[in-house]
Image (tube, rainbow, N blue to C red; front, side):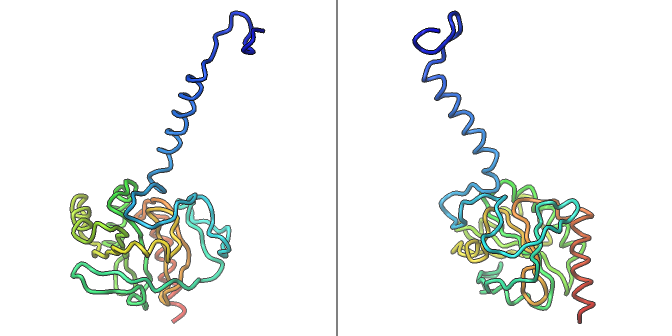
Length: 221
């Protein structure tokens, strides 16, 4: 062995090479999670792991086939009555949607996974939207309604109404841990469950989840 701990004839690793390799590995890891957790300075969503459950939140291991990241609450849970504006600039609140099942999608114009999943939410609204169910896609983004509308127009979204929160407080009020986050809400405005990250919301498994929720609500009335 030589004084650097290398066997005779073995190639020597310089400190600079080791540091370079570590930096490359860190960048690769960051890129893998940025789509869900990364954010610019225009949003207040906390930067925590998308795989981590909400601290102290009651959950169950029941899973939806095809939507493995969707986590049910053991019982419907009260949500903050967050405020935002619609496409006309009128003030709205989450409580305005009571009486119908809501799939609330929190998204932002800077979020690449949001761009990928939004068309599936648009198709879900087209197929199942009614007076008993609505997809509410809420832009939690300081860039404002005009930028949100350009985003939706650029990907051909036609069925989703425009909702925007330029304060970005909605993310923290609803304990979202990244963008996108989608919350299934019952007719009384309570959370049934949520899915952090993107999903194919017009898949058969997703539509089955929504239909079952609508049917359960109808049966209880």
